[in-house]
Image (tube, rainbow, N blue to C red; front, top):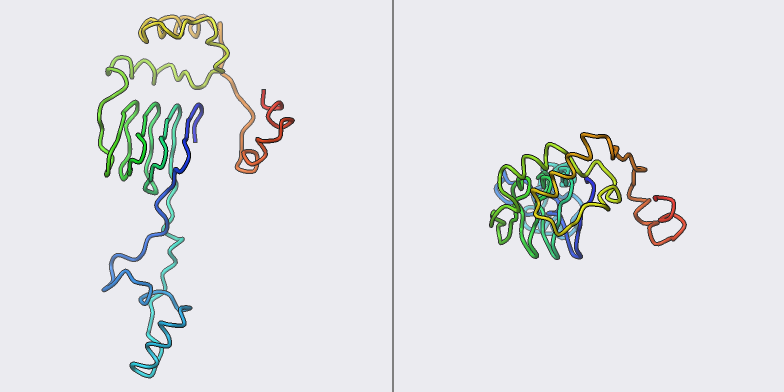
Length: 189
């Protein structure tokens, strides 16, 4: 996950994948430990059904969330997709494909509604990689400026080395769990 992301409550990812290339996706084709399957097979044909192993957890794929991504409430994300920088995923969307940079997607399945900015602005944002800087470095730039003027000022600050790339302490899941402890949160800044 990249920097400056916003993730609402209830966001989840598709779980394990059942085998799709068999007569059935039901667990009788791969799960050896279901006693009711074994019992039913023994009763019907007097032997255990010959399963073909399948480890559902082996199908798990990484989800890639880049920078400045906003994921709304109760979104469902397919494994293995990429949510590119600056995209927005609307509440309750079901995302089954990669979402391009600065796209806004909504629906079931999610489709691009529009882009946050025009192509030139998106190109500028991706070129300067503003997310590599500390947000406090932007304190003198008026947030109500039109985005093109805001970028003019930010690009100048970067070009003149008035702000430097920020390398924060890396956060791991265990660190996120500790965020409710004030002393840990204070140590980040």
